Image 1 (cartoon, rainbow, N blue to C red):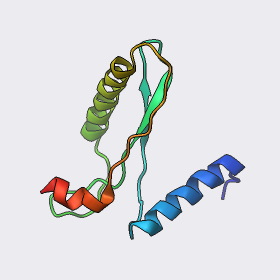
Image 2: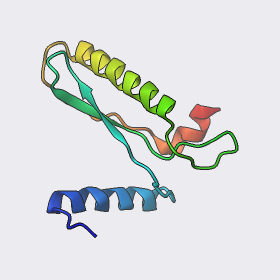
Image 3: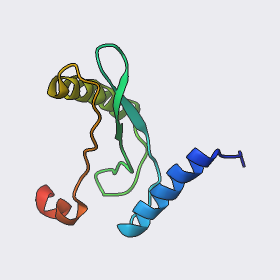
Image 4: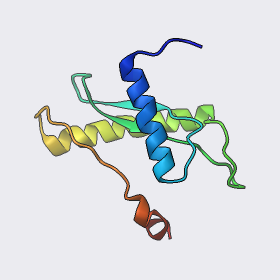
Amino acid sequence: MPVMSGHEQSVWQALLERDGSFSYRTHQLPALPLLNSQQEIIGVLEFTNPRDNEGKICEFSAHMQKMLQALSQLAGATLQGYFGQKNERTKVSVNYDNREKQVE
């Protein structure tokens, strides 16, 4: 087992705490950077546990990965436009309490 740095351990601890809070189990967690026009990271999109048509957790397909990369490029451009040329950061999160209502 590889040795993790203190930062890596705190990231995994936060993930485990989040999973515990929502009775959830993260199996996959790809994260894509949101880049501005100067190719600087201004945010991150995280994706967890893709599901197939039967609702079972599956792998991220090559097609899905390309689609998510395109989405991260659009999100980066949108975020840069929202902030103008400022180098501000924000955290956007999903309210899991209302997630089921939002999906309906």
